[in-house]
Length: 147
Image (cartoon, rainbow, N blue to C red; front, side, top):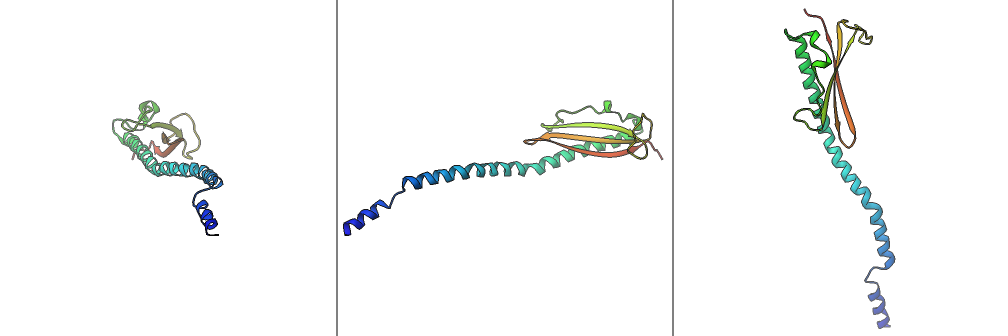
């Protein structure tokens, strides 16, 4: 009887083939989503920084346009797309592109017509890739009014 008990105990100390296969299946199912989650967390961690940089680049160019508008040597008539060429990439910021567009409108800011209408919507668009194409637009309205 004692010998039979020892044999049973000796057999139970290792893993069975079924237990080994079950462990492999569980790992095969669980590991890929965990790796994907880690990769996604890393990508999401960097998103706010890229959006902040894009916003800063847009505001920087918008301030240049506003300064040109109020310049005594440039003024309202200087605000055309040809004076603000596309930047691909933005100097010093690889991966970001910047474009400036101007739309002349009437006082309702919706009706467009040939200039001069006295109101201009200026839009700065920043584009970048962060595992997917992203873009940020910032706009303002400038007038032809000089006090």
